Image (cartoon, rainbow, N blue to C red; front, side, top):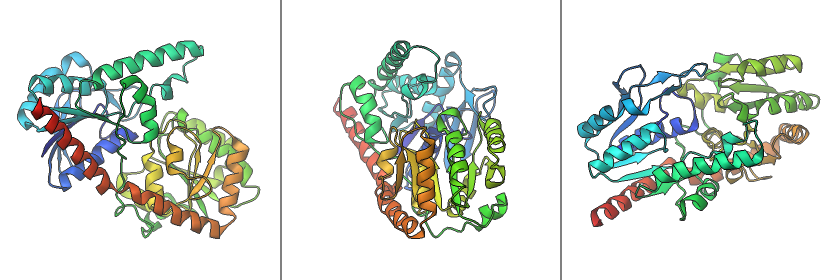
Length: 391
């Protein structure tokens, strides 16, 4: 099958939708499909490059000030390039990853050429609007308009998926039908409990002690400041180290907060961690934490679970689908520093508890094997092709 994937965020962007798209494209190619991607270019012009075994048609894009590696496109200058890419690749099916400029332009071009299109939704305006300094009724109006715009695009496709049942509960009332939930999936060969943490420990000079880990963008909605404050309390009872892997707008503020809390010697800020070193970094840790409140699934939590780590996470959005409270980790109320601190102390004070939670993480994550995800998407594509042929 020739699959063309379109996304407004792709390599080298650092976010969940980008990583999902990259890994889906590569995994489909490894299963024998011919796969190409249309995404923002790496330069201010159109470019074409290979990412693994996947051909990427880059459409003219521009850097975003103060957001490293992120790029945006202007809708009125990309249509010709997109039409040309579709003519060159001649896909059997197109899979758009959202409803923004690149994806909607690809949808329009594919429909003109009578090519079926499906979509995966990674969007939830409620995760963004709550940061706006406006009354709640204004946020509600903004959310309604944002959903209306998204649904206008998504309803033009032959099918829409989301990564979790929770994510579907947000979009189904707007789209007016029940949607399938197809997990982002995880490579259980690449991320596994037998990986060696030595390379990551050496690279980032991590001390030889029990380690709490966070991986992700250091942006406001990730609430890493909550973890730092909880760590300051936990260190009164347990001697552990906290590794913060990633970069973002909050990086400097978080480093300053660690100094103000007088815990900077218990925290390592690695900055961006290259993809090839991630399996080792998870293996170097003993527990994973995510205090974020905007996770429609959370790929990094899945990677940690596949490595056999207990998880402590905010009881928000889709994290409870991965974190079974008291079984493979603990949930805490978002922003509750004392509760998070208490859970950290419980896990790091009891080796037998960590071992039991580790086994449960491995059991839960086995249902998210990337091969199951790929089989689900292949069936999703076949159904769309059948609907298209019947029409």
